[in-house]
Image (cartoon, rainbow, N blue to C red; front, side, top):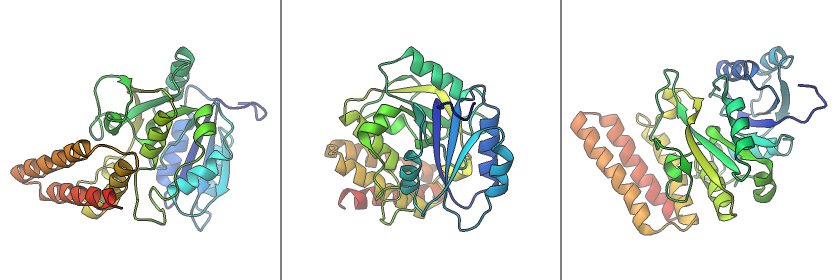
Length: 282
């Protein structure tokens, strides 16, 4: 891409503590079939570990390297202020893209001018889904959103950012509050409230490590994340019956895990239930 051209995609990413994974993402961007992009790296490390990697790949892709304080939502807001593309995405620093992902997303937005946000699903390296996802494509609403989005598989038109502004910095990993998740869900719910049309396509996929994605063996992580989810449910005025439905699903998950002898998963499901309750009453 010519340095003076405005990119189609601005990829906004906060990162801390990762080098191999960061390089893997950059490698996947270098070999994208669609190359009109910029990567905005909000570096939260206290050292210069990323500089050799950025130097290696800056000759292939446009990288804007910015220093920032800890906090995922804070990093994304800083990155958004530097974004110049027409389509914005938020890759995790440990995810990586299939080689045709940006081409597919670009084609989708060209064919669907009235859709403002596109979401997809996460897969592991063997292409199996990570987590629970709807199998059919369709529009996202307040109730199916929980099975139709993750932050690193979201692509949105620039006008959405102009209307919504930044992420709620009280939410997300590294925030100063107990609300360690839910920032992207909050953002999408705000988009829905503002009348934007959001579409989910399970054929839009992003690779993500299974071990980092799963909370089944990390009850404390599951608890911290679920506080944020409970808070989001209350903030956006979900009915108690829907909150109870999610809790019931987790209770059934505990029973299934016990039957299977998977005690770590059962403990994580219990932590999710408790975390949601705490977040709901915050």
